[in-house]
Image (cartoon, rainbow, N blue to C red):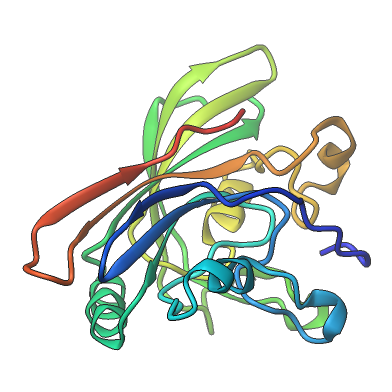
Length: 215
């Protein structure tokens, strides 16, 4: 993370709101929750609380990732959704642009991830102390020196998609932590949470929420 925090301005796009849940399209460059210190107080949940004072956190996206996030508006919804994430029942789809051309059209990364303690907040593949992490991926299209992929994380480890794509030798373009050499050529990290599929806390009906990638 860079030393200065300069979050984007503007309204947060609301994709869905009802008596139990709130779904928004998080902009890149905005923290999901407050960081440590007053200079990191501006964040997505604080902005949402202006219009939805009852808003409750369910999950997070990295500061530099954009896309679909669901929040609870009641304690019941927070518990219900939290269990779905914990039990890996929520289906998540991401879009990314990565460096290089992948040789295969699809695949899976099954590598444990742990904290890279000397280099926090970085994470790393850690076969000894890491927690299990799985990501499946599928190529959408390829250019001469980059590939657009859809990513389907089965687990929800910190920086999972960023570390797993790096492990393949194809880091996400514009990533300030894992591919800083590409950051100057890209206005943001090219990772977007495109779709969330979950069960509504009131009745359990399946629902899908999408926001197209802005890149």
